[in-house]
Length: 127
Image 1 (cartoon, rainbow, N blue to C red):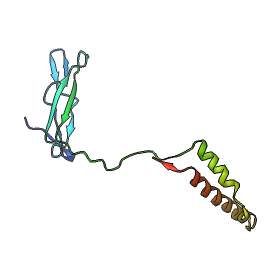
Image 2 (image 1 turned 30 degrees about the vertical axis):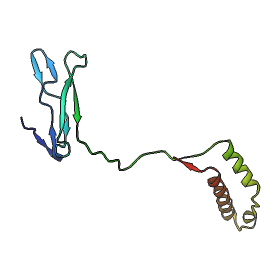
Image 3 (image 1 turned 135 degrees about the vertical axis):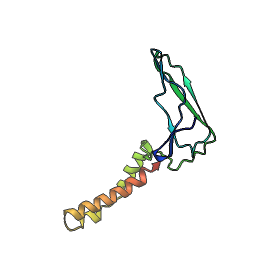
Image 4 (image 1 turned 120 degrees about the horizontal axis):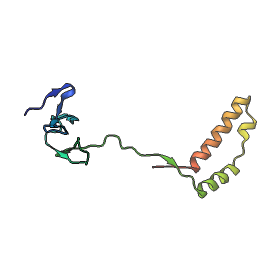
């Protein structure tokens, strides 16, 4: 039996009844795949204990899976050593650029630049 073609090059893969009820059998809950990418597949029914509905299992073979975007978290190291390092480095800052700045915005930006430079050097990034 040929698969029906659907938009986006999808084909239905289910050719056996999955809904059995009162002497009727229906092939619903189909699995659609792009058969041009996944030509080798096996689909089978799984008995799941429900009296009127079977599950489906599809096994795709010969798949070339390439991970394009590996997802990982980037966190900052925050341990006792990092906190002590921050305190130590901040204790050696003179903060002169803050006190000799003109205007509140300039003072704040100068403080923030110094603090973030020390912060980033103490709390390094890790994957």
